[in-house]
Image (cartoon, rainbow, N blue to C red; front, side, top):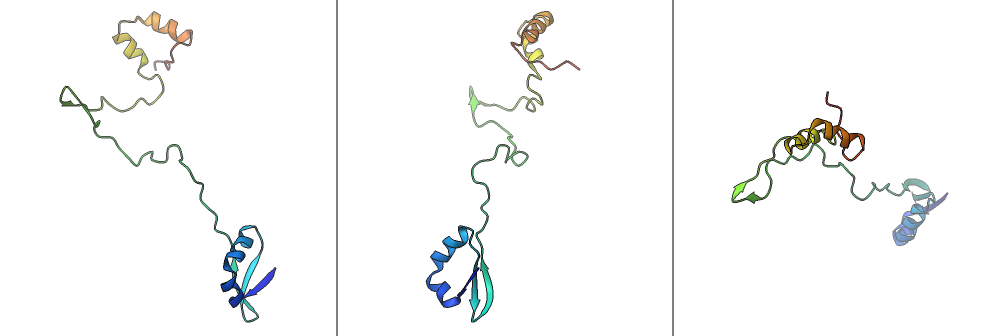
Length: 114
């Protein structure tokens, strides 16, 4: 560990910062008394984080209209993948047996109806 006087630290600050970021122990002294240790700041992880806005925003209406009328959400988003598949396919005329056959052949994912 090398101790650098304040005057040297002022004139060579960029070089000392580079050395501290490289892991070197940089100490600045007033006279012969060490007073400050120069250490790099840990950066937070950059980039986007999936789900960072979960629970912070709420959609109250869709930003478009159909035939001049505002469109409102039909209800909460599905809790599980395939949660409403059985109801949607039944509404389209599929029989329970046909939906079960599609599920068993892994064409669709329908959670157990419980």
